[in-house]
Amino acid sequence: MIKEWTIKELLEVTKKYFIQKKVSEPRLSSELLLADILDLKRLDLYLKFDKLVSENELCKYRNFVKERIKGVPIQYLINRAEFFGLSFNINDKVLIPRPETEFIVEKSIDFLKARKGGTLIDIGTGCGAIGIASSYYVDDVEVIFSDISKDAVDITKENAERLLGVNRKYSFNTGNLFEGIKVKGDIITANLPYLNREQMENLQLEVTYEPGFALEGGEDGLDIIKVFIDSIGDYINKKGEVIIEFDDSGKEILESYINEKGLENTFYKDYNNLYRYCIINF
Ligand SMILES: C[S@@+](CC[C@H](N)C(=O)[O-])C[C@H]1O[C@@H](n2cnc3c(N)ncnc32)[C@H](O)[C@@H]1O
Image (tube, rainbow, N blue to C red; front, side):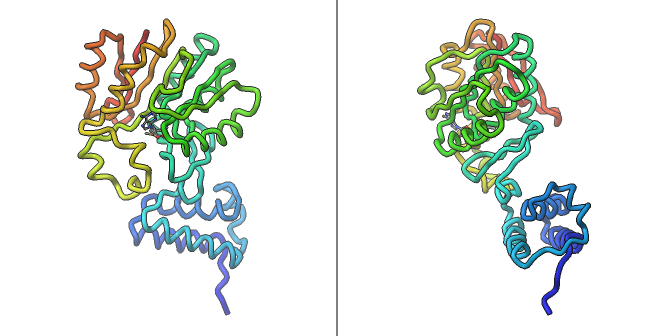
């Protein structure tokens, strides 16, 4: 007779297997994957511990487990990522939004609330995480989502329509940095690729599944960010704010670059005490 599995048994056996295979967050991984297949919220698994999993569900789960062991990030398996309390559709054509990027959203929300709305341009929008989260929590915000990748803009469209609905103003642009953008923003956010050459050569296994063009910033990680800074003056309104994410290793170079242009700037550290954000005020 074929063994039948309850949710509880499956989670326990998978957790052990993931530990043996050195998969990060073994229990959480098994819960998220099974919850997705059973179409349940993760915590609801605990209310249904004794439920039997069907043969079909088991087959899908086994495939997920196999992929997870190879290093495929959970978010790419379940095609979903949580960011700033919202659930974003994603696929392997876009970067998985990171918790550290939530700082940009916090600052952007503060800025937009203080001026009771405004226009936000999100450059390198990926799945739309920064622009959508900023506009979700503040009224009267118009967002222009832009990315060089059409696949990213397509996913952003899905997310914006689902999460922001029809009552918010937003539009989409595909182009290199500001190419195709015809308006100025009160705030511009940019989490552009910023890993340097050495970091690109030493990526963690899971990160190798993410698109290189979303990560790679050239020799010092600042190739794209510098070109972006060269253009911001043409796209920002008076009293506007530009928020950039970058890697700590490039801080000195970036700071001199911005200072040479005479731009007013403040640098911020992340929760690992590393410089990661710069705000430029106009
Ligand atoms: C690090 S990901 C960030 C995605 C998203 N903003 C987030 O925080 O999750 C960088 C994004 O910049 C886009 N990108 C790369 N080069 C670009 C360029 N020259 N112009 C516009 N977007 C670019 C990539 O396609 C990718 O979606």
